[in-house]
Amino acid sequence: MSFNRPDQLLKLQESFDICIIGGGATGAGVALDATLRGYKVLLIEKGDFASQTSSKSTKLVHGGVRYLEQAVRNLDWHQFKMVYKALHERKTLLKNAPHLAHPLGLLTPCYTRWERWYYRVGMWLYDKISGSTNLKPSRGLSKNEIQAEFPSIESHHLRGGVLYYDGQLNDARYALAILKEAERLGACILNYARLDSFELGHKSLKIKKVIFSDLCSGVSYTIPIKAVVNATGPFTDSVRVLANPRLKPRMKVSRGAHIVLPAEFWTGETALLIPKTDDGRVIFVIPWRGSVLVGTTDDPDTLSENPIILEAEREYLISYFNRYSAKKASLGDISATFVGQRPLLQVQLDSAMNTDTKSLVRDHEVEVDGRSKLVSIMGGKWTTYRVMASDTLNELEKEVLRVPVSPCLTEDHSLEPANAVSLPSGVPEDIAAHLTELYGPAAGEVYANGAERLLVGAPYLVGELDYLKKEEMAVTWDDVLARRWGISLRNEALAEKLQAIKKEAFAS
Ligand SMILES: Cc1cc2nc3c(=O)[nH]c(=O)nc-3n(C[C@H](O)[C@H](O)[C@H](O)COP(=O)(O)OP(=O)(O)OC[C@H]3O[C@@H](n4cnc5c(N)ncnc54)[C@H](O)[C@@H]3O)c2cc1C
Image (tube, rainbow, N blue to C red; front, top):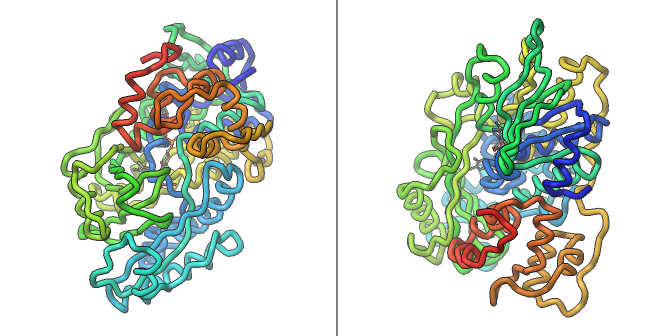
């Protein structure tokens, strides 16, 4: 069986223990963990995998410098533990898929002596909490050192800075890698499959069957199931009420906008952390796959399938970029934009100011509905997807299946493709870089499908298309451009050119 729709539809004839709703980071993590624990798993995703929040993140694998600051200021032990957990997960995430995640240097500029001291101590603490999982020690830098090493930064008024390390990941492809691995180990994983309703037991009102539609064929499926995990991120409440209409809403969403600029605006491989904007936010300027990512914002929002950037958000982000960058950009230089919606827990909102989503901790909670036995995993962040999955399955085993909790095996489970095929010699440099970055050890296998370029001057190959359909379950051309290649999130003009030569194999 391969990772494509016809093969996965065949698997629907099997019987399943656990159904997971949602194919973002959280659902993917639960699917792999459950499969490794020996369960028969079905995962359904109503759009493409990671098509919502999980492909629209800032792509950092981090403990959260800002959360550490809040933890220390408020003497908040819970928040401190969360940073500790995320910092330790950082290394695991990088280790398990090295072609999709790597360390990233981040420079924090300082404009007073007090700031230099404050951030130096803060980053020292960040290193200490990471302990043996630290990626690289932080270091303080003088103004002269910054000017010599990081010419992209506007050095006017600068007093020095602190360089520290976190990770960066290809979020959409990381989710795909987790799902592919779960499938390889036996799970049935299906995109464009929307949960419509549950069939509940007559007396117990416990979920007995999931009813979902294949959005490609229109066929409806009813599948008997022992347990259901709701991993629908910002959409969590819509699934909770399907299981039990009495449940009160738990989620709020906050929007985070990003703009993308061409690489020439921020050279080098080190990112910039702007630790405090005038309105109390953190903004990053990050070298990202041959472009520069600037973001993000954090404002309360209403739930939407496809949030679009506002003019005010573009202006806000570009004005902060220009304050800190030696090379100034205009709105016309923006090559792409994207907006994600954070799934935030309502209980946290109640305890914070109701409209200020910036002050919230990105922690997670597992809820087991006593009546339907629906298990909802809510909140969290990309970095902790594996811990969230483990917590979810521990609760599911205890509260729903009522079996002893089995060990979580994901920590040392590699997500790299098992059968490595290296690229032949003589492959053009840009194509080799593109294939290696996206497919890692499978680059040679993809290249063997056909080396003809789709577009002169771009590294995308005709032979990739067959692979993306048959081995990565791409259904629409947008699945290819936005998530398998990620080009429409970085360079809308190039994505449009590719759109114009859309291949018949893909739906629009
Ligand atoms: C702007 C922004 C920046 C962020 N940056 C970072 C960062 O740098 N580092 C970090 O660690 N975290 C970051 N996060 C947090 C992280 O991205 C999210 O916590 C994570 O992606 C949430 O994943 P999820 O799977 O829970 O939700 P989603 O990715 O939204 O997945 C839920 C899925 O459920 C599906 N679904 C919904 N209803 C149904 C249904 N009825 N049937 C079937 N499927 C359904 C949806 O289509 C969706 O694909 C950021 C978040 C945002 C918004």
